Image (tube, rainbow, N blue to C red; front, side):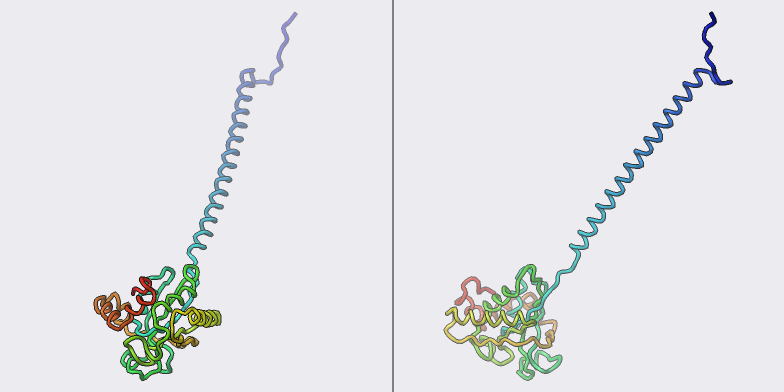
Length: 243
């Protein structure tokens, strides 16, 4: 009996068929591997894009400038009113100058001579997320004599009057309430005479007056004591009355 004959296409041997099958399997495996790699790359790209977007949003959120507010106080000699606010966290900047009078661009000589209607004052820019207006008003009270009319300590004249210049209705209402509270506290035997008035145009003082306590520290300390301010504040507030 003759052995079974395997029918083959011309030119193709059994080994050729096995070889073709092997190549087919290899090709199929390569395609699947490429698809897997592409899928992984897509996942990584999406993940990196999402992470970059989150970081960008975070950076935008953190880089947004704080919304600053303004407060203005007159407390006699402005040399002495700048340090307590400069030392307060949340205060971004302070500028000493003149406000409350009709004259534009007054000079120190004009204001100190009582010719302008202005008061020496300090303009405070602050971040309400770090320090409240209420806290600033409390600092103000603790650095003046609110019972002294027409001056502060050794400095006499309307240009050295005490005043809170409010920049909004909310500031006005709080300043009034704070003044009434201080008057009822019994801390002072005399009436509280500090003015509460709407903010007016503010004119920065000459540069040599800005941060005077840093430019001329010895003279500043001598003046703050000899004028009577430091002794008074310490007698009223203890260590909290330090300049």
